[in-house]
Image (spheres, helix red, strand yellow):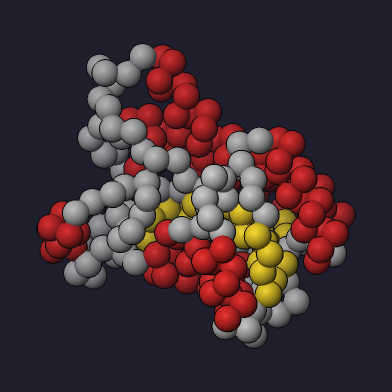
Length: 247
């Protein structure tokens, strides 16, 4: 198995893309620390164990410095190392035009999104630097590069995340640490963008690959970036949108 012996932390692991990423990483042999905030982690961990994998549930808020530090320390005590961090915690995307936003509402969304990648990265980067190895994978969104009406705060935050990842890639590449971005478009069962079956059908109809993504489609890309096949990739941005957004 390509990730045998590796240890992964996944924030936002209770549902949607984060849950699918946990399951896929475990299928490939990784030991997975499943984390989320105020959501039940039992189903994700139980499915991994039922399939012969190894996982532990560690509830934590990805925006909290203290909780992320405790998460990293617990993983080190439990598994001895940290090889992969998947920043999968996603905030519910608020819909509002620029005219409807105040600075306070705009700032709140930016802060929530960026803290949810800053604090987990800060918590693991020292361990990865000592190991001289590590993979950090950030779950972004195509809205950071492809503006979507009424998602100005969410899209601006994701654009900031995309830039943050490149700076981490540049600064920590000499320590054997890579940082890459996975940017989903519309995803079925994505808690950040709840759309109806009719909307899914319509969007799928003008997507080159003929459908919207399933969480497993995104999880497959995350798992690839965690493996040896991506050992010389860093600072990359990969849209997972069936061709609806192209690089």
